[in-house]
Length: 195
Image (cartoon, rainbow, N blue to C red; front, side, top):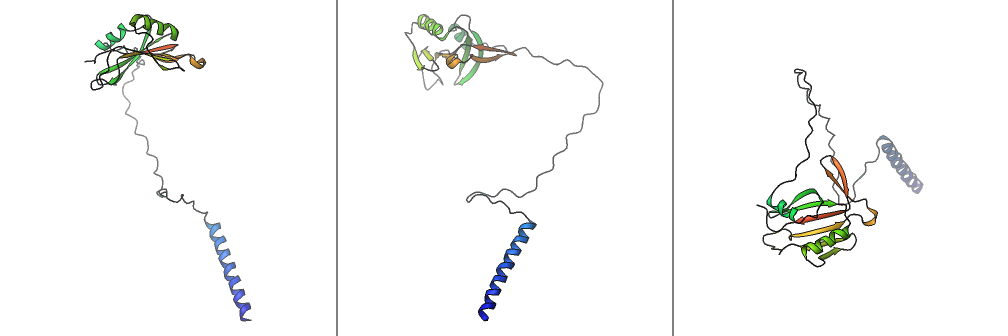
């Protein structure tokens, strides 16, 4: 008899725990826990949105036309003059970038083929074939002087890159407000620092 009471008590306790667990589950959904080793998310309530600033007081009515700025003119410097001296005739200035240590990169675009541009620099620089940097997309480098790693960030050179590889429509440049595509891009780092 005693054994029957013990079994009934155990079943009763188990049933009570199951019912209590079910009641608790119905009252609140389980809280997701982070993976072991991670920190739990913050439990702070989200901040209410900040109201927009008050509108300025009305003033006299004026009509203003939108300001349209002209396209930025290329920087003129001794380095740009040096870069222009190495530029392919008819290539358009795209932009220039700071290379560091007083040097700048100058980008020019042209719709002449990569092969034409490489041949032009082979002939005009008397540099042989230059140095092939990549086969696909084709890139060729022509050195313009010695690289002094203590004073320069990049070797003085001309790098020619083919932007028609893999049926690409060309390098997309935005000059002012106009978009233009170029088959070939010429990067020039003239010799000597920019002062």
